[in-house]
Length: 126
Image (cartoon, rainbow, N blue to C red):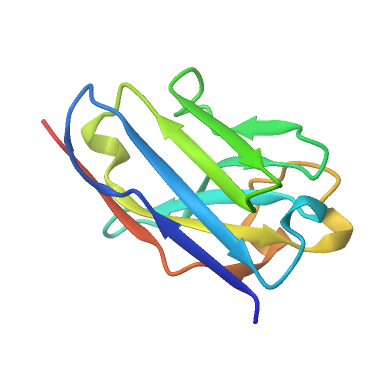
């Protein structure tokens, strides 16, 4: 059974750090691009970062220089290291698997993803 399970969310002060993990199972995660998305209250879900099957990475402008995505194919885990967190980073964070035909690049477009995790809450206090 295909699953994506996020972990690592929590409450942190502004300027702090968190590391999110996405545990993939039921498929060979290294064959797919994986993306991180977030949805803040009252806002649409947006792309945060993604990593292609070949390790090409992509970031939203709002997180460039602060967030780092990485993957460990042996452990089927994709991580998102978040530093210098701001209150505006508060959201539910989701990891998602890209469609196989689109996994050659690191998309931040939701429609390019077909399987999603349940999300993990990140709250940054000011």
